[in-house]
Length: 388
Image (cartoon, rainbow, N blue to C red; front, side, top):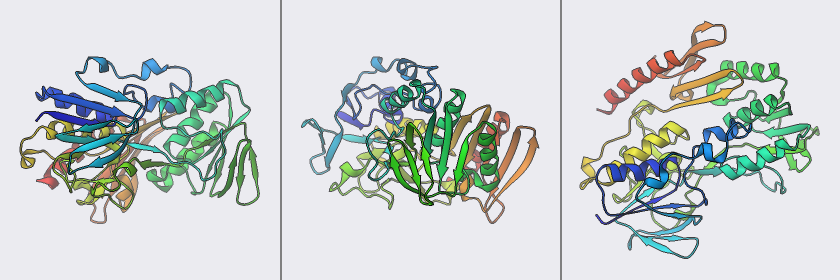
């Protein structure tokens, strides 16, 4: 194998490139990124970097420049011709490959017809622009979307003394946590002074605030749309690679495209069957999965025979820090038929998600890393057994 090309200078793309070298590939290795930056970690963007506690340099992954790779930054991939094994880039260049690893991740979903000045938060430039807006000491920020990004930014802004209005059409924030835990998170934000507008439809986002469908106006100098993300797969149009209904790249358990054995993928862009989801294809947008995917896709890309590739069965894991609360979850809690709090001690709690047959499919903890670690081990064992 002469050339491996990785599309996406992300966490997943970096781990894939590192794995390619670690398993002995001494041929060409090219990493393409649409941003001008070398890979960096994203969790601090809504927290430490936004608060001014970290810089861009602090978010950079260490020793990236020691990786023996040809970095093509600031030029997104725009097309793929599988017959000639060629990727075209926005700057007009083209790259041929023997194996291709797609790690293009997601982009922030934008609000239709939002005017300039409405912020989104996905990359380092977004975070720096939002930080500059908060550094100007606005009286209020309006955040549309009470998911993890919206809630983390709300917590960061409140710590900085900025008034926050957090708006969502759902009846609670953090829907994947379920109704009871979501209600507890809502109470936490209210305790810290956040004006929560839940079950509220949004009519218009404007420079000076947000107009709700009930006629209410929320005035704010800073507006953030935190309404989810979309997989970056439009550039694959016409390639023949199979996508799922939400635009994820369909892969088998080994992160190999179901369409082409020479194309693998990693991170937020991948839709793959997971044993803890009953073999259903899932797409997981979390840091740990991206890192695991990248390492596995890089190793699998060097397998001479596709049958020698290993599957990804580790249970998904994620965390969120809001005020003094650390939320951690493992598995697929949202797929459970029930979510039950099984232990609680002040700000610490443990909740188990079980399917209709009573099998554990996920767990959520508040300020209880030790218990969460035990659930990770348990679900990893069960996933291995289900995959066997």
